[in-house]
Image (cartoon, rainbow over all chains, first blue to last red; front, side, top):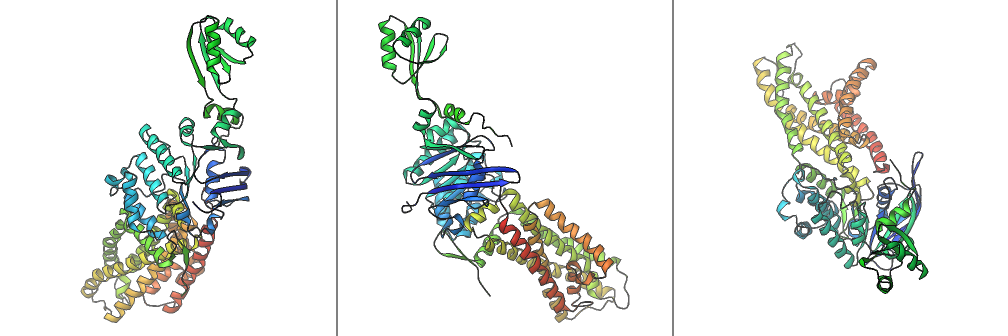
Length: 304
Length: 251
């Protein structure tokens, strides 16, 4: 959407607050058309990084570029990047429409765009009500409308699903996917890993301000140990021996259920039938983003 | 006059007046702004008490009945500005301003200018109310009333002084990014100025003293010098506020 430049390119980013190194030589990229999850334990440096990208925090080292430019040098800031860094960043006494009017007025964006987004994000009925009376989900939508005012190709969202009800979470997921389908780049931080797994293409995982990994979800799964087959049989002990003889790796056992490395449930099932075992459960399980995350961030928890 | 430009999403440029207009839009669209107008009846009441308690001496003039109320309005305008801008930091809405205008300085100047405008309007309304209350009292107590020219000149002078004091309040709001503390700073300013002014004998050259000087259309300090000193305070405090707010991390 914006020439050949990478949507977001963070290189060697470092930020210290006194003795605390919040971000430590962090590098990652986000490409157009991708929804990238930005995850890590509390205090890992996610919010500091996002704020540094948009110039709210000055880095002590390294740089963050958007479409090849520092945020402060963007000729068209809101038309390049839309950011939701703080859902509560709105005056409670101002109506939703007036909140957007202020943002539009500041950036020279026509009011027709405000009204278009109010409708597009389903805020029509509430637009003239004070934000004080908005639910958290409505505030999230309003904040997103503000981020989209300039029709940007890059979106940076800090915990946009926080406090949303299941319907809101589903709406947000579909909304973010639709933005990526339009070729936009979306960098989204979240603690909702199960939900994030349904939304993102790639993840950037942080711990103690450092990059732990940047990868696609499938690569992350591979890093976390790959898929497993869970099989529940009538005589698990006997079948475990049979599996080992056949060259399978058993990763665990839970009663009559065996957890076998790999994803060839068919072969394992045929082996069970061939040996005359009654099979009551047989599934292939890809490692969850959550499992991979916990494996990668073990010992990296921060408490701030 | 130089005009500050900032690039915007439409590819056009946003001039400082447009940013000031945005700040006015912000103020117009929240209820708290309009509650400031409640100051005006207060001006009338304070002027009434001032006049009732002021002994009439041979040199008593009309403006002696409104000294206190005009100072109250000036300080209230400054506190409103400081608390409003402090509130933008507390709610983090100022971050939205800086997303639109990453250069920050035009936004910061626009905020100071917008509150100068608020002070101007408030000062003009306050002096009008004060005159409306004290002129009949002055006539009733045989205190000489001023000419239309003097009343007009005082209205303009007080409005300008209130404007500058409100702008000083905005600068304090940028320096102290927390509304209660920012407003408290204005109150502390009043106390400190009173003590310092008395101790050093410089009351006439300090901001609150200058409001009174201006209302009197001069006195211990000539009117042009009074405005020059007020403007000097604004330039110094405004520059310090912009420098600090320009570099401040929003975490």
